[in-house]
Length: 168
Length: 246
Image 1: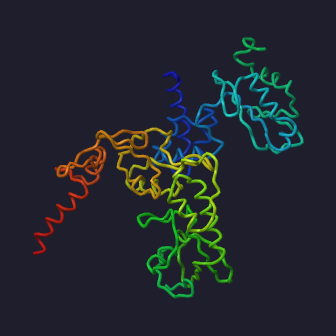
Image 2 (image 1 turned 30 degrees about the horizontal axis):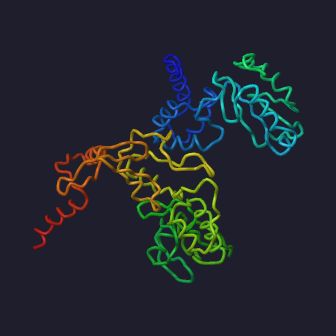
């Protein structure tokens, strides 16, 4: 799936991230955070290189990566929709927003569109209950979202790939 | 140094844990994740004991990781300890529903397991002994992956690991037999990886993988001439010793 050129770029990126840290066990988490930021997920090659770099078994690094929810082991979309599903947002209809996102993008929470542009996640609470229901796309906050807004928001990020094909 | 365990004065040495002292003094403390070959992990919390500090305050600690200090006072049995162990027994039996070992624990502590949904075929109690065994052996391919109720023992990416030598140390140490090992047609399948098996030169029993032999040879720097299984090796050593003992 990943082209050879992309892979070369990825390895160069990984090396660049690792160059910022001394090869010590305590920097594993910091390196992984940088990787997550750069690639939107933790690539296998990245974890392998990191384990070798700091001199711990891959299993240890993998255990850490799988433990924290901030890390993703599968590629995430370019734009991540974080739909708040805390008590306030839930009552204000976050489930309907998730349903609307499914209608528009064809993905459920935790999934990514095939073109790799959008992902949906649910968040237990964003701490902005007064703005319920809240949706955060990457770093931008959308407050008091109604189902009709969902399509507008998606369009802000270039719309969806199958747009117009199977809308009914 | 001297420490007090249940109003009994016992000798302890610096660097020892409460559990190690108790084991030596034949004071029973139940454990699940402890094995004398490894350091205490403090994972299962079955070995909880109460200590009394200098101000007379009581506190629950895991005896397998708590280091002794001079004048330490330990209580190995109290209502509080019993209660924590009962809760643990309930949770462990509730999770590891397919493990008779875990169910026995619940029976022993007279608790009704809190059966979790979706764990009907679970045997693992997450004691991490396999992780320790794998690491001590030198492969370190196992880890506790994910967290919370999803936590399980796995190899990275749930695929056969390069470093795995198929030594089965993980399955040998597992108290509940949760690790799947298939041995048939001269092959061993373990942790998503298939190994060939070598036959014992003496009795013909299949006992090790070529990767295992190579690992030992690399470690000891000696080439093995004859592959013998554990039983035959012991017998051979006994034969040699016999000559000397006359």
